[in-house]
Image 1 (cartoon, rainbow, N blue to C red):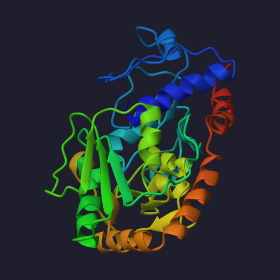
Image 2: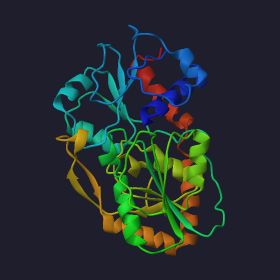
Image 3: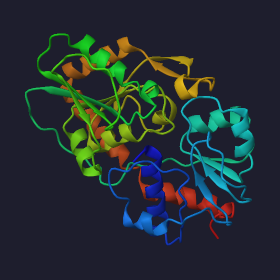
Length: 329
């Protein structure tokens, strides 16, 4: 249930809904806390097939085989690709990526294969939930860390919350992470952690129980979570940077100031990304607390904008690219 996993399940559904016969080969498998949908299980084949493929995986993974008509869907979270990856990418007929930022970075890194921008979608089932009256104002942040803790940067949201509200009683920070994830937490009863897998229905309820979604990530190739929060009707506090900038601005949330800093952890030596300014996070969290009617208005705007990002819209842009390059015939 990684971002790639959820995305690929939806691609399979989109092809099937468009009447396209699709077989899927898993280039990687992770522990799944819930069964794969039947339409995904039914499409799986035991090994890569010798016909044109639509490859969906990070650029740091080498394709298993050279396929003449391969089209590669890639997202990446920092500004630079390894030159060895570029050589592998250029063996493809074309590249598809969801954001102008990724397309620009790939081109600047020397990718010569044709590049197409195809925006992604909010996952099915997310819809507007009205606010309910309660005696506290609730912030939330989330991330499936799994080696990505530095990039997801949840610690910045926790630090900002404690700085903004050292003694305020009627606030809460909900932190959603994976079952085996770790994030350092202060001894603060106002910070509540959910450390387990949530189904799509449970996750939507989690968003609906917030007043504001805080997204301190340093970079996203797309970023499903802010868009899910918007679809639920919750304003977002985030940097307008990377893939998130495709759908997020000050009409749907509060923009966090940032500086360009060298990427680190698994992205070490792969360019730069955005380092959110913690003081700006603090200011925006305080502003949200003091301007609740405005937050409701921004949430409504976000839910309307999120409606544009549908799987159908993605497939209408993706399928012609695959037809042009011989993957669908």
